[in-house]
Length: 258
Length: 288
Image 1 (cartoon, rainbow over the protein chains, first blue to last red):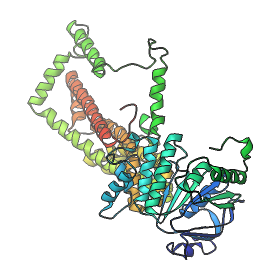
Image 2: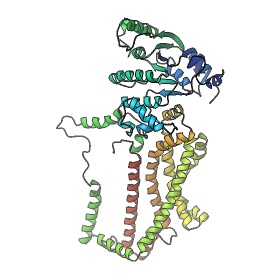
Image 3: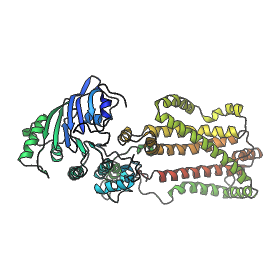
Image 4: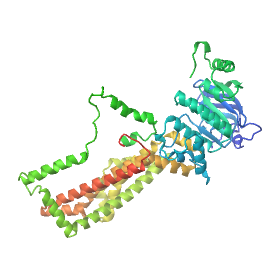
């Protein structure tokens, strides 16, 4: 791993047990050429906390997620970033290896002797028991994304990073996936950072919603609504409006940003 | 073409679209469809059988001179004679051995070079240029040089075949490797696959379609090179049998040799396609 300036590598070697936080980011800077994508960002995520990260396109959401996933070794930057080694990533595309059957995809990279058993259990959890021998092309988009969820959760991660995981799904499938993700997170209790551009998705799923603007945290709001959350209600609408304003959308003139 | 077009993973929905579009293109339910329609049963045999019938008819009617083009039944009788005295079998065995050895070395070499060039930038810098230069020189043009270096024995023949084989294997495998989606490398990093695991689970299966396409060209190249080397200073093999027949004016024996070459080419291509279909069952292409 290439050493970043600012003692980043040293901070990363501790395994998520820095104080109370699972993720602790201080003064993080990431630049592409002259452009500062992340500009002195601070963020802390507690163990088991579900944080949604909202932002307009180009606000640096994906850059932050890639920094946490350690997929940005070739990007210039500074600051300190502590995240558990034991993390999983769910991408916007399911990213299944087409030449491996579903179960093979779930247990990819696992070496434990009971990997296959755990893989089957994870598939059952996402409602795909019996599809272990299917090829990825035989699954629908939603099913593929559920396999990707199983692949992430079978690793029992301390931190789950999700980069617009439901962005490519149709609206009905997305609602079903929300319920599933919420249930899985309550059972496995990983800390979650969900990158999304969908305000409703953020409110329905997260404990806390963070808005990113020009490389910094522009708003950090606890959701504090009782579960199960549904669209509508006074608290819901108020929070939605505040977030939309932060995102630079006028809620009065805008039917809804999906 | 179709083999590489589907190397990338596309969503099933995207893949289904062309077929649906094609069906709709017919207009109303009674309109004639624009697609070629359902395949005829045993349609592939129709063309060759028609040719054979014309040939037999021409011979029977005396339109074809028996010295230029003997009748099909003469060819069959000659094949029977050659089989009876064991000459055909022994020549065939020699030819097959040369082709297989050449294929073996050529495929191994091409595969190895493609992996090295595909997995490291240094390897690519060192290997790719020379292979592209080699590609521009027909292997058969190297025969005079190879004869001077290696003599006229079996080594020269096997090396010539191997040189013809390794180029398509290299080109297509390397192409397949390069075509592997960068996103899979990213995935491999996030699930903590090591270098070896990456090669085993991502690189090799990802390059397999390209490799198998290369194999189809390689098999053809092997038979092609075989024909030529067996007509240069050989003392055995199908090509030698034909060359000898030319000296004695035995047109029928030459035709037997041609038929054998043709059958070998068809059989080996069918074999590679069978392997391809079984090894790539994870893909659902329009070809089925």
